[in-house]
Amino acid sequence: MAKHKFFIAGTDTDVGKTFISQALLEVAKQREMSCFGLKPIAAGSVMTEEGLRNEDALKLMQSSSVKLTYQQVNPIALERAIAPHIAAKAEGKTLDLQRISGFCRGAMMNRADFVLVEGAGGWRVPLNNRETLAELPKALSLPVILVVGVKLGCISHALLTVEAINRDGLTLAGWVANHIDPEMEASEESVATLQSAINAPLLGVVPYLLDKTPIAASRYLQLQQIL
Image (cartoon, rainbow, N blue to C red):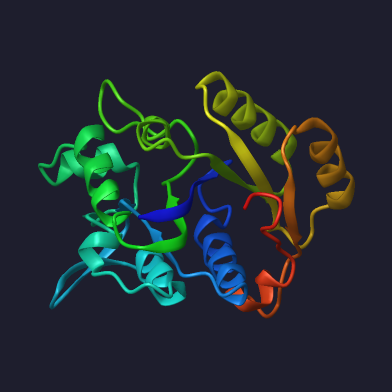
Protein backbone atom coordinates (compact mmCIF):
# COMPACT_ATOMS: atom_id res chain seq x y z
CA MET A 1 0.00 0.00 0.00
CA ALA A 2 1.13 3.53 -0.71
CA LYS A 3 2.15 5.45 2.42
CA HIS A 4 2.06 9.14 1.43
CA LYS A 5 -0.44 9.85 -1.37
CA PHE A 6 -1.34 13.15 -3.01
CA PHE A 7 -3.41 14.45 -5.89
CA ILE A 8 -1.65 16.93 -8.19
CA ALA A 9 -3.95 19.69 -9.40
CA GLY A 10 -3.21 22.74 -11.53
CA THR A 11 -4.61 26.24 -11.78
CA ASP A 12 -5.05 25.65 -15.51
CA THR A 13 -3.80 23.47 -18.33
CA ASP A 14 -0.13 23.88 -19.30
CA VAL A 15 1.01 25.11 -15.89
CA GLY A 16 3.57 22.32 -15.47
CA LYS A 17 1.71 19.67 -13.46
CA THR A 18 3.70 16.81 -14.95
CA PHE A 19 7.01 18.67 -14.72
CA ILE A 20 6.45 19.49 -11.04
CA SER A 21 5.18 15.96 -10.38
CA GLN A 22 8.42 14.61 -11.83
CA ALA A 23 10.44 17.04 -9.72
CA LEU A 24 8.59 15.99 -6.55
CA LEU A 25 9.26 12.34 -7.40
CA GLU A 26 12.94 13.24 -7.75
CA VAL A 27 12.86 14.83 -4.28
CA ALA A 28 11.29 11.66 -2.90
CA LYS A 29 14.02 9.52 -4.48
CA GLN A 30 16.68 11.81 -3.02
CA ARG A 31 15.12 11.07 0.38
CA GLU A 32 15.43 7.35 -0.45
CA MET A 33 11.66 6.97 -0.68
CA SER A 34 10.13 4.53 -3.13
CA CYS A 35 7.70 6.38 -5.37
CA PHE A 36 5.55 6.41 -8.47
CA GLY A 37 3.19 8.70 -10.32
CA LEU A 38 -0.17 7.99 -11.95
CA LYS A 39 -1.92 9.81 -14.78
CA PRO A 40 -5.33 8.10 -14.84
CA ILE A 41 -6.71 10.25 -17.67
CA ALA A 42 -4.55 11.68 -20.44
CA ALA A 43 -5.85 13.54 -23.49
CA GLY A 44 -3.36 13.93 -26.30
CA SER A 45 -1.81 10.55 -27.07
CA VAL A 46 0.07 9.01 -29.98
CA MET A 47 -0.67 5.60 -31.46
CA THR A 48 2.27 3.20 -31.16
CA GLU A 49 2.72 -0.52 -31.76
CA GLU A 50 1.72 -1.02 -28.13
CA GLY A 51 -1.35 1.22 -28.31
CA LEU A 52 -1.99 4.85 -27.40
CA ARG A 53 0.79 6.43 -25.39
CA ASN A 54 0.76 9.83 -23.67
CA GLU A 55 3.97 11.81 -23.21
CA ASP A 56 3.11 13.01 -19.70
CA ALA A 57 2.35 9.48 -18.50
CA LEU A 58 5.64 8.23 -19.95
CA LYS A 59 7.49 11.04 -18.17
CA LEU A 60 5.94 10.04 -14.85
CA MET A 61 7.02 6.45 -15.46
CA GLN A 62 10.55 7.65 -16.17
CA SER A 63 10.72 9.53 -12.86
CA SER A 64 9.18 6.72 -10.77
CA SER A 65 11.35 4.30 -8.81
CA VAL A 66 8.53 1.74 -8.56
CA LYS A 67 7.98 0.38 -12.05
CA LEU A 68 4.38 -0.16 -13.07
CA THR A 69 2.90 -1.12 -16.42
CA TYR A 70 1.72 1.64 -18.73
CA GLN A 71 -1.89 0.52 -18.24
CA GLN A 72 -1.52 0.94 -14.48
CA VAL A 73 -0.09 4.45 -14.84
CA ASN A 74 -2.45 5.64 -17.58
CA PRO A 75 -5.51 3.39 -17.91
CA ILE A 76 -7.41 5.95 -20.01
CA ALA A 77 -5.40 7.37 -22.92
CA LEU A 78 -7.34 9.60 -25.32
CA GLU A 79 -6.00 10.54 -28.72
CA ARG A 80 -7.07 14.18 -29.11
CA ALA A 81 -5.53 16.92 -26.95
CA ILE A 82 -8.86 18.45 -25.95
CA ALA A 83 -11.11 18.36 -22.87
CA PRO A 84 -11.15 14.70 -21.76
CA HIS A 85 -14.94 14.25 -21.80
CA ILE A 86 -15.10 15.66 -25.35
CA ALA A 87 -12.18 13.49 -26.49
CA ALA A 88 -13.77 10.43 -24.91
CA LYS A 89 -17.12 11.08 -26.59
CA ALA A 90 -15.39 11.45 -29.97
CA GLU A 91 -13.84 8.00 -29.44
CA GLY A 92 -17.09 6.42 -28.30
CA LYS A 93 -15.91 6.12 -24.71
CA THR A 94 -17.51 7.13 -21.42
CA LEU A 95 -15.56 8.51 -18.47
CA ASP A 96 -16.86 7.29 -15.13
CA LEU A 97 -15.59 8.28 -11.67
CA GLN A 98 -16.12 4.85 -10.13
CA ARG A 99 -14.14 3.14 -12.88
CA ILE A 100 -11.32 5.70 -12.78
CA SER A 101 -11.03 5.58 -8.99
CA GLY A 102 -10.99 1.79 -9.19
CA PHE A 103 -8.02 1.89 -11.56
CA CYS A 104 -6.18 4.20 -9.15
CA ARG A 105 -6.93 2.06 -6.10
CA GLY A 106 -5.60 -0.98 -7.90
CA ALA A 107 -2.35 0.78 -8.83
CA MET A 108 -1.96 2.17 -5.31
CA MET A 109 -1.96 -1.36 -3.91
CA ASN A 110 1.67 -1.43 -5.03
CA ARG A 111 4.02 -0.69 -2.15
CA ALA A 112 5.56 2.77 -2.18
CA ASP A 113 6.47 5.53 0.25
CA PHE A 114 5.27 8.37 -1.97
CA VAL A 115 2.60 8.39 -4.67
CA LEU A 116 1.25 11.17 -6.87
CA VAL A 117 -1.99 11.03 -8.86
CA GLU A 118 -1.93 13.75 -11.50
CA GLY A 119 -5.14 15.31 -12.74
CA ALA A 120 -5.89 16.76 -16.16
CA GLY A 121 -6.32 20.45 -16.97
CA GLY A 122 -7.68 22.66 -14.21
CA TRP A 123 -9.76 21.80 -11.16
CA ARG A 124 -13.31 21.53 -12.51
CA VAL A 125 -12.69 19.45 -15.64
CA PRO A 126 -15.85 17.47 -16.53
CA LEU A 127 -15.80 13.69 -16.75
CA ASN A 128 -19.38 13.48 -17.97
CA ASN A 129 -22.66 15.33 -17.49
CA ARG A 130 -22.72 14.51 -13.77
CA GLU A 131 -19.15 14.23 -12.51
CA THR A 132 -15.92 16.23 -12.62
CA LEU A 133 -12.31 15.24 -12.09
CA ALA A 134 -12.38 17.22 -8.83
CA GLU A 135 -14.35 14.31 -7.37
CA LEU A 136 -11.46 11.87 -7.90
CA PRO A 137 -9.26 13.03 -4.98
CA LYS A 138 -12.36 12.97 -2.77
CA ALA A 139 -13.17 9.40 -3.82
CA LEU A 140 -9.57 8.38 -3.12
CA SER A 141 -9.25 10.45 0.11
CA LEU A 142 -6.21 12.26 -1.27
CA PRO A 143 -4.93 15.63 -0.05
CA VAL A 144 -4.13 18.04 -2.86
CA ILE A 145 -0.89 19.64 -4.01
CA LEU A 146 -1.66 22.63 -6.23
CA VAL A 147 0.68 23.68 -9.03
CA VAL A 148 0.34 27.40 -9.71
CA GLY A 149 1.59 28.47 -13.12
CA VAL A 150 3.14 31.86 -12.39
CA LYS A 151 1.96 34.09 -15.23
CA LEU A 152 -0.29 37.11 -15.63
CA GLY A 153 -3.62 36.28 -13.99
CA CYS A 154 -2.21 33.59 -11.71
CA ILE A 155 -3.35 35.27 -8.48
CA SER A 156 -7.03 35.05 -9.37
CA HIS A 157 -6.68 31.58 -10.89
CA ALA A 158 -4.88 30.27 -7.81
CA LEU A 159 -7.23 31.79 -5.24
CA LEU A 160 -10.32 30.60 -7.10
CA THR A 161 -8.86 27.08 -7.28
CA VAL A 162 -7.97 27.08 -3.58
CA GLU A 163 -11.49 28.28 -2.79
CA ALA A 164 -12.95 25.43 -4.86
CA ILE A 165 -10.70 22.83 -3.21
CA ASN A 166 -11.78 24.01 0.24
CA ARG A 167 -15.45 24.16 -0.76
CA ASP A 168 -15.24 20.59 -2.03
CA GLY A 169 -14.15 19.49 1.44
CA LEU A 170 -10.62 18.53 0.44
CA THR A 171 -7.33 19.26 2.17
CA LEU A 172 -4.80 21.48 0.42
CA ALA A 173 -1.56 19.88 1.60
CA GLY A 174 0.69 22.40 -0.14
CA TRP A 175 1.33 24.32 -3.30
CA VAL A 176 4.16 25.01 -5.74
CA ALA A 177 4.81 28.23 -7.62
CA ASN A 178 6.09 27.30 -11.08
CA HIS A 179 7.34 30.18 -13.21
CA ILE A 180 6.23 29.58 -16.80
CA ASP A 181 6.52 33.09 -18.27
CA PRO A 182 10.09 34.45 -18.26
CA GLU A 183 8.84 37.92 -19.21
CA MET A 184 6.25 38.28 -16.47
CA GLU A 185 6.62 41.48 -14.47
CA ALA A 186 6.36 41.51 -10.66
CA SER A 187 6.42 37.71 -10.48
CA GLU A 188 8.02 37.70 -7.02
CA GLU A 189 5.36 40.07 -5.72
CA SER A 190 2.65 37.82 -7.17
CA VAL A 191 4.07 34.77 -5.38
CA ALA A 192 4.33 36.77 -2.15
CA THR A 193 0.68 37.79 -2.49
CA LEU A 194 -0.34 34.16 -2.89
CA GLN A 195 1.84 33.05 0.00
CA SER A 196 0.07 35.47 2.33
CA ALA A 197 -3.37 34.43 1.05
CA ILE A 198 -3.07 30.63 0.82
CA ASN A 199 -3.33 28.77 4.11
CA ALA A 200 -1.08 25.88 3.12
CA PRO A 201 2.69 25.33 2.94
CA LEU A 202 4.59 26.65 -0.06
CA LEU A 203 6.63 23.62 -1.11
CA GLY A 204 8.86 25.61 -3.43
CA VAL A 205 9.24 28.34 -6.00
CA VAL A 206 10.59 26.96 -9.27
CA PRO A 207 12.10 29.68 -11.48
CA TYR A 208 11.88 29.66 -15.25
CA LEU A 209 14.65 27.18 -16.02
CA LEU A 210 16.85 27.04 -19.09
CA ASP A 211 17.92 23.58 -17.90
CA LYS A 212 14.33 22.34 -17.81
CA THR A 213 14.81 18.97 -16.18
CA PRO A 214 13.01 17.45 -13.19
CA ILE A 215 16.30 17.10 -11.34
CA ALA A 216 17.05 20.80 -11.83
CA ALA A 217 13.57 21.74 -10.60
CA SER A 218 13.86 19.40 -7.61
CA ARG A 219 16.54 21.66 -6.13
CA TYR A 220 13.85 24.26 -5.46
CA LEU A 221 11.36 21.90 -3.78
CA GLN A 222 11.01 20.26 -0.38
CA LEU A 223 8.65 17.68 1.07
CA GLN A 224 9.28 17.72 4.82
CA GLN A 225 6.24 19.89 5.54
CA ILE A 226 3.82 17.31 4.13
CA LEU A 227 5.40 14.00 5.18
